[in-house]
Length: 476
Ligand code: GLN
Image (tube, rainbow, N blue to C red; front, side, top):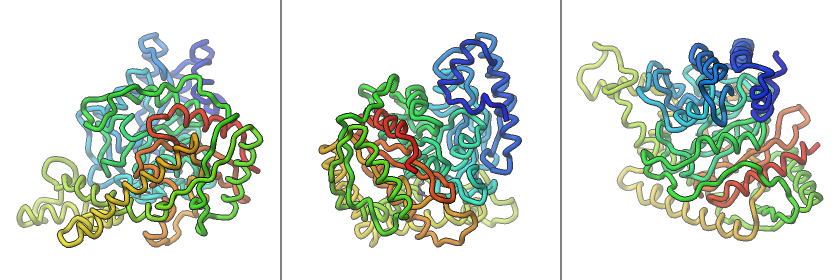
């Protein structure tokens, strides 16, 4: 592998600017590395020709911007004009969008070289990137293990040095948990700071696009490119946006909140030890630990699976075989109802069907009050608990996931799989920013992620603290 691929964005930018390397050379090295690691299934579509053309444009002085000439990958639920966008589903396996997502427009305007579309769990539903019509993604750290999900392709692509950063989407942890499993950085911004225009909707009140990178500084750099008001997303924030340049990486005088509820019985002892060691290191670096309480923490998982499934059932109603996407074979159906049924039966995978069924169940008359409405109320309680806790500190620290990456092919029940989201879903429910940074490895060598949760809209402070934790190095 070409050593240049080991650099972070900042390092590569310096070399490109000094013309020590050309963007075409770097892009070719990325494409070779994608080919060399294709058994990871990190990509669904590799956009080699478009990437080389964008790299040439940079080398010819035709593009400039914060990401000019830098190879970046994009999760395959983010629309790319004229490049198929599948959501890892049979339903959209041939879908070619007529327009770019807001974030893709922004990447292009910043001069980025898009090398491909990354693999994922179908419609972003899953925690292992195994629910993909295009084959399960493998973890580059140890291919016998899953890379996490649903942005497992993005995390694997970055960890395998096939690109310098990737975009993911995070509805309940899908950026942070795979980043933690693959040993890279995953950042979910405050809800509303990155436009969802052109992100295929899973659960609209929770979905947020964000970066997967090698360093916290790179996550900030990518955020600065993709964030900003967009009138095409009705929830897009219209106020002052944080700017992530020159982050304050000092932990001195910072108050770190730790909730006793974070240390559950499901938390693996090695992860508990790694987080605790890192908290002690933060104290030595001048931070103060503050005891806080999130009483509603244990209710978050149920709340999330009710709300996200309800929204998913509604959002996925549009895949009916009529306007776009997969359609059951002519002659296989008798009337239009039969067309819908056969199209959806054949076009969706098991997990997606499960979510649609859960969602329609909790929204149906008789169960709406008992589940959906109650979950909305619990959501308010969770938000209040987080706001109260965050009023006592600068950020909360907890594990990103209760375990390191599980072995691939384990026959876990859906409920067991859902448990792996316990630490990430509350952050989406409360609309807060969260970031996962590496904090060492377990005794088998698998990465452990530490999650920081910040105050809404104060993403700059959060990334500063994350840079401070990153600088502590792994807890060994
Ligand atoms: N694992 C969670 C789920 O399956 C989160 C998914 C996501 O954030 N997109 O719903």
